[in-house]
Amino acid sequence: MNRSRLAPLAVAAALLLAPPAAEAAQLQAGAAKVDITDRHAAPVNDPLYAKALVLRSGEATAVIITLDAVAIGELGRVRNSFLPNVRARLETELQIRPSHVLVNASHCHGIVCEDVEQRAVEAVKAAWSNLAPVRVGAGRGREDRIMENRRLKLKDGRETDVRHAYALPRDEDVVGIGPIDPEIGLLRLDREDGQPLAVVYNFACHPIQGVPSRGNTADIIGFASRTIEENLGGGALAVFLQGCCGDINPAMYKDIHNPRDAEPLGNMLGLSALRAWRTIATRDRGELKVIHQTIALPRATDLEQRIAALEAEQTRLLRSLKGTSLNFKTFLPLLVQYQTSGDFPSSPSHRYLHEKSLGREGLGKLDEENRTNSERYLQNIHTMEELTRLQVNRDLLKKHQAANAAAGKPVVDAEVMGIRIGDFVLVTFPGELTVEIGLGIKARAPGPFTFVAACTNGYLYYAPTAEQRNNTGFAQEDCDCLLAPQWQAIYDRAVDAILEKL
Image 1 (cartoon, rainbow, N blue to C red):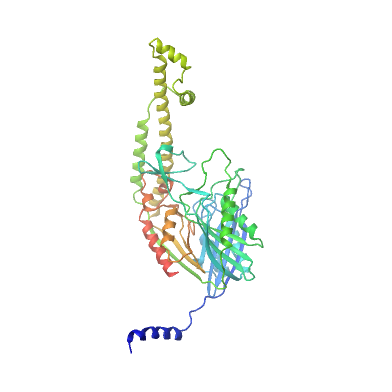
Image 2: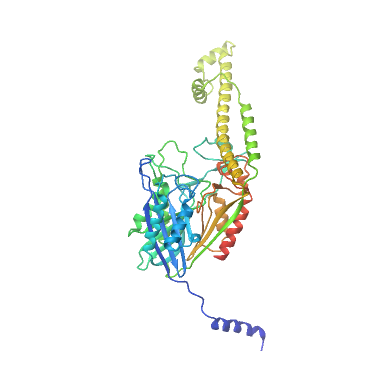
């Protein structure tokens, strides 16, 4: 008989005789939240929360804790001891493996209470006590109206950024901006009766818009989560995981004509998440898998050279300042006068014509002198703005230079987690990843619903791409960074390996 005909028959027979693939165990979940607002530090606009989601499938258990806080350690009220202490208590009291506990900061700049550690544990215990079978599904939504990339590409090839700490560059010097990631990553968890238990949503944007009252606020994320929870009802919980927000600002971040108000932006994000949530199909069983590892990332060794280059630029700018007889009191009315009065700024047109008929040039010479002085004064202002930006970023470089010198080792340990919940796959990083890193991971990922959570399990400040890290324009992401440019390749390899195992 022809062997080519036997091969398909053999394969079919093998498939019929093979044991069925192991079916994923029934997924259980419990969710809870606890108020962590410091109600004494400042007036409160809206509450901050610690939220906990406990997941169990067969022998596997995982915990996701989210905090309306700026970071997990280093900055703000959440101390460096928070993560090990919370993990130790959960291991002792609930027998949850420390490596299976994921803690994410929304990166809002709200002020949390002093006992945030205790309250986070309380949230996990409440979620644990509510464990119940759930149906699970994954999906994605889209929101592109509420954020913008804050890195500005300049004509000379450098990049700067949009911050309240310093002025914008001149409009004529800006030729482009960086990308955004409009994707909302979604995990849907429903009770067996079809009622929603929790929605996990992942999105990349700094929640730093603020509110008109300037009160304590969970910012964009607080309003988005409230929108989701109020629409779902039944005590359903919205659990936010911050994405690659390092260079992503709220839209209209520098608007000076309207009060800063995160509520409209949060409402739009929440409604967009709900719109996509409604399209997600759920199933009874979903795989739960967790991978945890610590990778060594190289500390920067070139900060002294970068500081020297920045200071050389400061010196050049200082030397470019030119004297002028004007001060601000005389400059401002001259600027308005010469920009609004056309060819006759110093006097009515007939006076210019009268002088010309007499062969005199007094008004013309006055205009020439005033324009020269105004242009010099204006250039000095632009130079001052540039010096301010360089000074702020030099201080960041110096801070990390000192930290790296004091560390006593050339690498910094970084926790990286991978978690699969049904078709929902998440990888993490303990710092502020810029958006291009997240976009790259998603493009390479083998699964359709792969997302990235930054600001997770620690805080290593900003982690820009290797190219951004070497930018001679000295944006915040490049300077508020303790890592060498080679960090990105190491992290990308670790993430790709984790995704393959998940």
